[in-house]
Image (cartoon, rainbow, N blue to C red; front, side):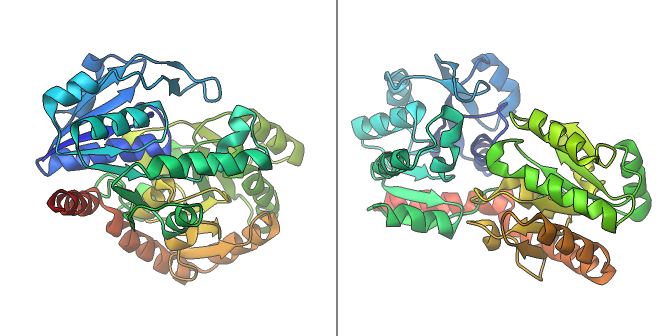
Length: 387
């Protein structure tokens, strides 16, 4: 099958949508499909030859840095890929973003009569603050815009039921199904034994017990609540460290909060990591934590689960669909750092549940393996082509 993937964000960008688009292209290529990605990037198409590793090809369009997210790119839907779609004639077009590149996908699908699948990844209204538009009166038209875009598609995919329900509630008319985000469960694996874990803790400067957050360091991730919880936690568990893996616009504010709370020796900022370094950094820790209230189905949480970490998370939006309270972790109320600290300390003190939750995390994560998700995507494409 010839598959065209459209996304306004892609590797080497660091965000959930870019990661899912990349992993989907890779997984579909792995099972024998001909995949071409259309995106915007400051990188050349030659650069992506190595990135695709023969599993997919990448075509880029002219773009500029986006003012709200300087690390992202901005373009206009001026039909730059129409000739390439006309020449390649994919069987299906799969769009991942409702912006300029996404509208190119809509145009191409309509012009050439190609089935259009759209994945809706996140609650976009939670990100309005980045473009100075975080107002209640803006959220209504923002939802109208997003739903209007996805109503152009023949089929809508979403990684969580909560987001699917929101789309329908705001006026989605087209069929929608839940398909999970893919995770490389062969890369993200549990630490093999206690000596290896001890060695990894030493490598990353973690002398004892630790909790870890991994992901974008931005205001909507609510990491300040985790820092506050860490401030309470170090009083309960001597030597406990809070490790933050990632980078983003909130990093300086968090450093200032850490200093203000007097816990600078208890918080470790590892910055941005990829590949095996990221896996080992997760393996070096004991419990994954997140206080985000804006998550749909975060890859970071599932990757941590694949690495065998139990999870303590805020019960919001799509999180309860992957973190099962009392099975592979604990769920808490939002904006309650004292409750987060209590749940973490309670779990750390219960070695039986630590082991039980760790095994459950790994088992649940396998439902999100790249191969399994690729097969689900393949079936959805084929079903659409038959109609």
